[in-house]
Every structure is written in C-alpha cells, then in structure tokens.
Image (cartoon, rainbow, N blue to C red):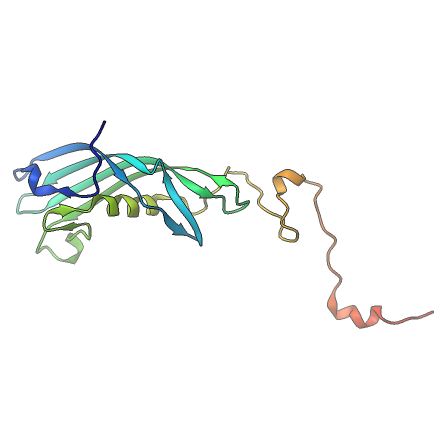
Length: 172
C-alpha cells in the first residue's frame, strides 16, 4: 500500500542536481463545485504517480499522473454520472526564475500535493459531465427524462400570444 499524504517535503528526498525519483503515493482529492453542482473523485483517496527531478541551478521539475472517476450529477438528466478522468500534469519550480517558473504548489521546498492533485483533476475533467455519451437529457417543457418517456414524447406548441385578442372574438 502506498503512503497517504497531503504534503511532500522535497528537501527530504535529498536529490542531487540532475537526479530524479518516482514515488507511488495516495492523495485525498477534495470535492469541488462545477456548474453549480458538487463533484468528487471516486475513490476519494486516489493513488498517484509522482516524478520529482532536481534541476541544475536549483528548483524542481514535477510530474503528477492519476486516474479516477468524477462522481456527480449528469449535466443533462441529473442522474449519477462517473466519467473516467486521466490526469498527467507538470509543474516547474525554480526560485528566482520569474513568475512563470514558480509553482503555486511549492513553498520552501514543500509540495502541496493535495491542492495540486485537486486542481489538476478539476482541469482534466470533461467540459460536459454525462451519465452516458448519448444521454438525451430532460424535456425542456415538463422535465420528463427523455430516455424513459421515449421518442414519441412531445408537447403541442403554445398558441402565439399576439393572436390572443382575435381568439376572444365571437363571430357567431
């Protein structure tokens, strides 16, 4: 079983410049909101593969890989959905190298692995979270589940309100 961690002390790896290490860890991924709905990783504690390389001149090159399902409501029918999400994220932290070379997840050689995993997982999530690819969703008029009511489900169009006064005329 891989060790469970929220944070990793990079200095404790004692890497020489140009040296690297691969680690197998377990990281909890906190739930997050997307499009007004709550989504979470399944399982909540995810096995991750972390590659840490010490750069010449100081700093670290980091790579995070994980696979988990994104559990939450389908964006079309609101039934439970759990599409798979594959994460392959990279970060560079080189102090003094400019803003683009400083990772927001590394401070004083401590890597906030849980925050990085959560953000990378959320960014890798699909734009539309569906229970299945061909989910027809809900009827916009009556909110019936279109996968259950069948293709014959329809509503008569509402009469044009511009003609309402003419319908009130009694011509007989």
